[in-house]
Image 1 (tube, one colour):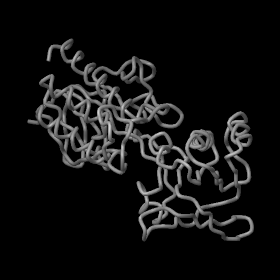
Image 2: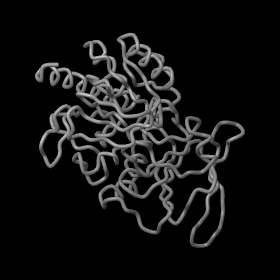
Image 3: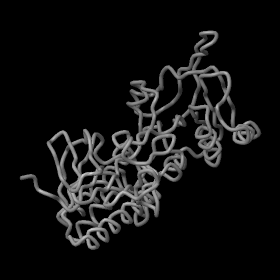
Length: 315
């Protein structure tokens, strides 16, 4: 007979680990399914300087490791597995995973969102060494330096404008002739003296792999085929994030970009009606802030809601 768990947490980033700490302390013996990217986006982040309690900063993998140790101390169990399918209407909730079927009374979805990358080998090799997908996380490290942002929508313009607080110059690279950004965001970028917009341009290579430090980009004009190099010390991806929530399509309300819609901060819904015992936290439902501290906060909320739900139904 399959064991019925009190709570299962999907994801082992900041949100999932915080939920594990809180549900563990409540005696719920949570099972954390670590997913395809254990530790979430913090696992590929170098120095985190804006997480409270670390005046000198802390490296992302170390922060995640500390949180995991803390959760383990409170009897959280961890399983390297990913979710294949789920039946949110079943009671208990049924999860089909890469390690078999799991039954649970409550489910906390903390599966995060994955940054969209260009897919270049040189780009991947330099993530955390001058290549970033988060301006608010890493902009400070580029004070007084020339950097580039890839993208043509509002995300790219917001990143570029934010980065002007630190960088001496921000070059926005867009592969098409026309930007997708809203008129007001585009006008702000055009008007800023430290922002340059370059269209019909793609990045072919990020330079600096051998040195483990970005020092330039190899660019190509898609109309003329002309190649050139742009000297920059950083490359930011402003082409959005992909929430890891596709497996819930049809069983949970998602917005137009695939983020989980929530009521009361972390309550999930289907057709506007709250799904009993199913909660969402972190970047999978947060398209606005996407910070470690906000993910942790929502992980706490999801855990407290799961505890209250179990008390209400008599478990």
